[in-house]
Image (cartoon, rainbow, N blue to C red; front, side, top):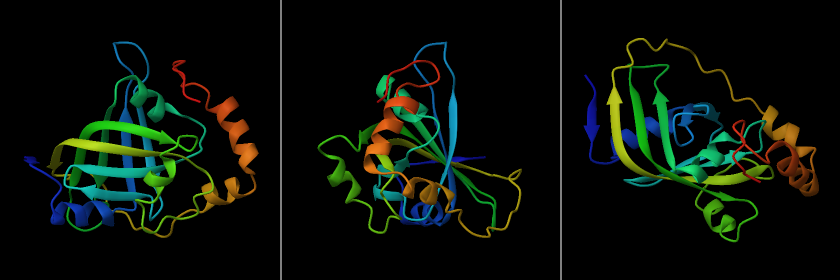
Length: 183
């Protein structure tokens, strides 16, 4: 049986930051629209900012659902699974905001990451005010060995200029798959 915690304490924080992969889930308001689940990774792209606050770097990608959904209703869940060691799943439920690279406070949000990888292609910082912290057994999560991080996201964007990224946001990240406006 899972447990609900009053906050992200140091033990949970150690577990969370040790995971090389986490998942982000959001959905638009109402009964229509698509629920989105996105895997996230890369060391240095996730930080715990306090017992009820976390953030991660959101890089340019093929979809922009998380930002669209956060602008629509703010609801977000982050899930961390143990793929090695004792089984465990930790979920952080909360309200998120995105601060886009085009916004005045972006540099301040980016400064909260002590050791980010190349930030050239970061399109937003997602900050979550955590309202619920819980864990569950994770007994069905497979044991897997982590080999290495992929550098394809960073290398693919390294070929793009700042102007290319502006055009990318305007064309490929203009709206969510449900038509919610983003960039």
